[in-house]
Image (tube, rainbow, N blue to C red; front, side):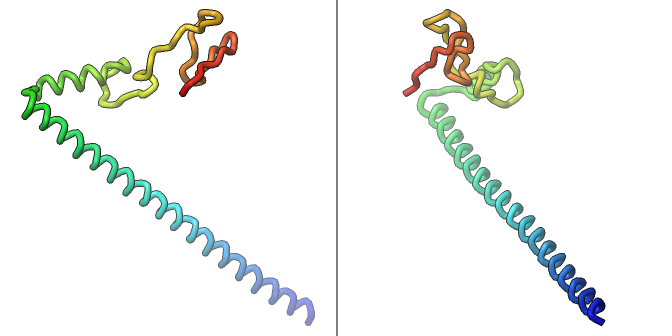
Length: 126
């Protein structure tokens, strides 16, 4: 009789724990979805703001200075090519300042680390 009660109690406990696990999984998934939606909304707002600013700048250039749409398209292509490929994207590493020579050993200083990989000279950034 005691063993039957223990089995019943243990079955109920297992069922209760399984329900808690299921609830936690659902809650976690909902939290992740909410966070992703929040990030998406924030990025969409930033993109819309940047688009509005760019449209305003283009209209000012066209209206006040007389820049043509063709000149703007050519400049966009020129900037796009700075990273070596026309793909409508900017590789920010490629757009940064050119690698500098190390004053200690004349090797190129790695922009990603701001130090010379050969002698260890560190570039001080403000």
